[in-house]
Length: 222
Image (cartoon, rainbow, N blue to C red):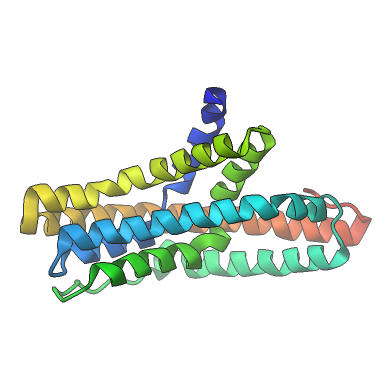
């Protein structure tokens, strides 16, 4: 099982790029309970991510059977998704990035922070391609149910680990963590402004070529 981490770690590094979650956690530091709210937001996202991973694992066999025997509808849907990804990549390129307004200190309950953290995961789940790849690798290893869940839980904890910098700085620096996190958030925005469109664009191109190849010669690329 340890050998599997040599495959999962590179996937995890690609999966960690989540500027939306980080930006929201930075926002929670500006609320009335920065440590509790930032921790609750990360916990909500992590619990939701793990829950969806376990749920997807149970339906993965049926999904892989369908993928092994794709229909013309599947390629048509893939073509549509491919064009949508290319459109999203074009819209989110660095030149179109809008500057976020400075967050204002306001009240936020830990329960609401937990819920928004979970919602951020739900909204972004369809684009979490590395997570699907990690899930596939875990299931392909043909481990026991308990070992598979433990491995998936370890992956999710590894995902959450870098984001702990937010509540950690809130605990250590208090109010002084806000400008530090704001600067980190700006750097994350700059990196994601280039990486996210690139990743979405590449996936979109592959899906479009896959569908066109199928409709032209009757055989898909993937």
